[in-house]
Image (cartoon, rainbow, N blue to C red):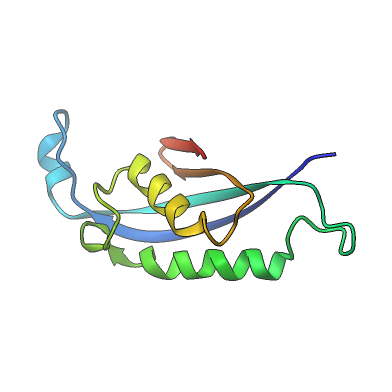
Length: 119
């Protein structure tokens, strides 16, 4: 059997963005509440019965959360363009070595915008 295990967190952050449509408001510093879901996939360890200890999973997510929560995303080292796609890629990059069973990262906002990266 193969399982998927997910954890969610949210973060508040500001950014600017170069766009072709709605360009003026996007160029100004503005912020959002972002929601993230990180998903792992695999088989549980036969000894523990867990894909990963949730305490370890949450600890790894907390380290990423610290890098982006209440930050100006334009200045976050390694993030690149602070788009939904860029945030997915950044979070995945931060976690890939530490969570080897990582399969996806999803980011969304209450406005209905979302992006999901399949690793």
